[in-house]
Image (cartoon, rainbow, N blue to C red; front, side, top):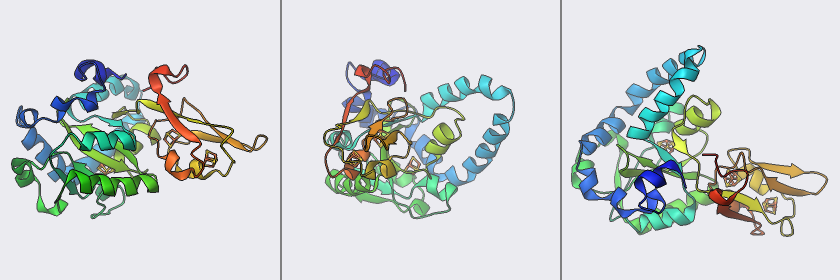
Length: 268
Ligand code: SF4
Ligand code: SF4
Ligand code: SF4
């Protein structure tokens, strides 16, 4: 289990603990205003921060700054990858869902209406706080899960996000246009999310070497052996998102617990 499960999970996965979604938590510590400010000012705030990070990365101070940047992120807005079946469990825990325009894609590709962000409450005070430009819709949890199943087929990786940890307020569906992917994985600036609690593996008897799964994996974790005409997952590279499974017509890929994987257990 990850660090947040130990701190915020009451002996289970932290994102399955009901209290981390509670209305009481949302209404404490200025969270509603924090979330409103976070979303409403994202397009103005983030480009200068990205420039600053690129400059920092060219200096020797980057290595020293990384742990502090990660700690600040863990306090305010940190994520973890979750597979589709746990998205379904999470949506069974919440009463209302909002869908809004993805703020990362507004910044990275100038797309204003990419609707991949889900808020895990339809609390009226929060709804009132969010700017009209994010064109918010209110969905039932059932409607949300039906649309997220389609995104899983397309290979979009699901993740949950805190707003003033441990409150969990966001469920995202991302590709390589996601700022978390770019900051954390592509540019390795600092950590903004944990990998999933799982690692994928391939049943070599079932695999026919078609390589569909390789195209679905955003993390380059699947390797093809021309000799064996099969694929294998590198557990050091696997983020445990599980979306490769949707691309495999032979059901050859399954997830197993990261904690029990001898190679990946300590890699978050
Ligand atoms: S984390 Fe993903 S869905 Fe959420 S804002 Fe960023 S790209 Fe959009
Ligand atoms: S999609 Fe399935 S059958 Fe095709 S290479 Fe991947 S694991 Fe093998
Ligand atoms: S191999 Fe791992 S990282 Fe790649 S799609 Fe599958 S579960 Fe995700």
